[in-house]
Length: 296
Image (cartoon, rainbow, N blue to C red):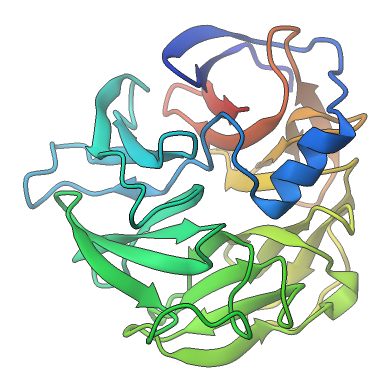
């Protein structure tokens, strides 16, 4: 299904454009290397799950999007895509350096922000006030987290974090509700996983994009490997579900650069890559079927 949708681009400011099929945009080797390592480059990170109404948050909730250049988290209306607060978490170079993903805590009391350079998951309350390091407990431990990117919550309230570097590379680490490390939910290199970027829970599996293994990998609800869902060329970042059950992937580079849409079983539906965009990072479907995407 080819869809014409609105996309959101953010660097110094936000603009709206039309998202449609277009020509591919080759990312340079230095851009790809920077994206893998978390070197500071302009642009936003992944979109978050919607933070629900409550504790001063407006009815309808908020869509949180980290912006790595200024080390802040922006808030958007999850229904319209309109900017609500450019500094929901104001620039915080003390505690953030390349924030990638912001999600609601399992108990709903605040939210968590993964930091690719600082190698931790930071905690903020629902007003955007810094609380402290959530995981690993005790602070930075590169034997657990290094070059972290996307996160996901398990139904039991445990936190999953993708690990791209260090001695625990190519794994998805698991933490309890207090930030204690429980081991790896997905083992190092399971089913050929190399350099995971994001993890997405579906009803019967987890999807994990490998930016070096060039696959959307599938794992069962216990973390054991399934057959891969689909190969992708060549740098999948955020993975999201569309309302119809299809899968949306923000693909940073390669011959399939763009927002890539698949059926639930991995059949390609379309690649949405307008000429004005490139270097896709985050993706989120609005209720009207339009797509927000972040790039850099």
